[in-house]
Image (cartoon, rainbow, N blue to C red; front, side, top):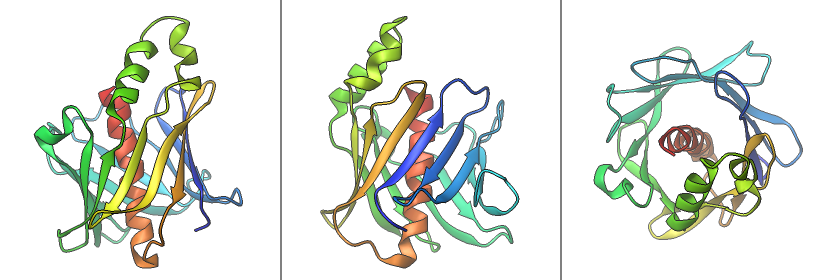
Length: 194
């Protein structure tokens, strides 16, 4: 993958849609989330044509306060998971990225929780809410053993949500897909949370 990656969310769509592209503009994956599900299940495709399924992401429970979201290949093999850290996530979003054996390998931390609060509060005000993306930029870091490997930042956008994922330090190639899927699920969950 060529960094920075760009995650784009269509705001005016009925069902949440996300496009993930690399620096060259090539699609990394595409998600169209299904509406009205009691237990979260997301299908991730290789591109927006939705011909080839890359994986599915499913929650282990209906109430997602500390739910774990497992990534499975099309043949059912567990590829990894992402898990919200319960009470730690109330003020500052905090998630663990797990490997295929369920062991924590990376973590996602919100770097500036006040920016998210500002973005959320102002986003609820008519007309002003359309413009919040131009001045509130929450940031999130993917860390391993205290080192920041990737940083995701909400960017200015009109009529869509846009996040850029920049590489700070090299990421092991066999972990890249799991991290991208974790960031994708993280954004879907945090957007629904506010």
